[in-house]
Length: 374
Image (cartoon, one colour):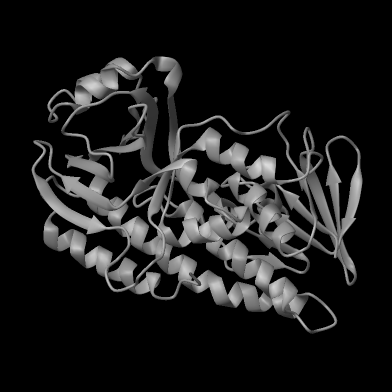
């Protein structure tokens, strides 16, 4: 089976590695001129950590990141509102959640693949299908023929535009600034994510490497269509929060900060058409409200690999329809939970984030966790 993957971000690399683990080889095409290994932090729930360990095959997964056991939500003064164990009591997940430096995780995946697995400067410019397969055309003039083409090229997916032009990436009205800094304080714990919620914004911080005192943080806020905030403006916005949050952000160099508007995908009614299928943010982009995006991509990638390998029919289409039916509804419900949490944190009046309101949303999340493959 000849499989092409468009997009060499985390989801594209991870799916290629899953296929390799199952004995299938994929070619990966990336529009950029080199590895997309820049960035800040990436969080994986226990479900995703288990998939990742299966792919890597040993405990390098845990060694590459920082285990996380709790999500703590505080108010602006630091008072604890809600504590959520990430292993979700009663599920007996045989893994912690893990927070990774994105560069470290990217390299772990890339090094597990063949040296020639990724073709750079290879933007996909067009797709043609017939009864026997799919032909992908690339910006350098090449055309490649595949049995299956996977679009893992993100929220602004070109593959999605070819097969579902009615689906659009929509600005959520929320922007985020992410940073990495060497910073220690007794109020910032090494085994948990700490969320500070106030007046339409949040500051979230995770440990990245306790031994080195390395921390990841992001400040998310309603942007109102205005330009993204720089460091000085962010400092002004967080000046009333409990210490040490302002000090942590102040200690972060501007070159260690990344800002962007956050988007979702609207109007996507099917994740595949013929021999083309979408995976990761190209299909189910969600805000990082609970940090479930890459975990969902790994879960769905495993389901797609399973659909391909377990298909007994003469063609792939029935397996792809089964994959679509199997994961799309659950993924849509997961996105809806994240959207409702986003509304609670950023678009409701201050004080709406309470223990009861958070528990109501987490009960829905818990129900969805029951249906995970892992």
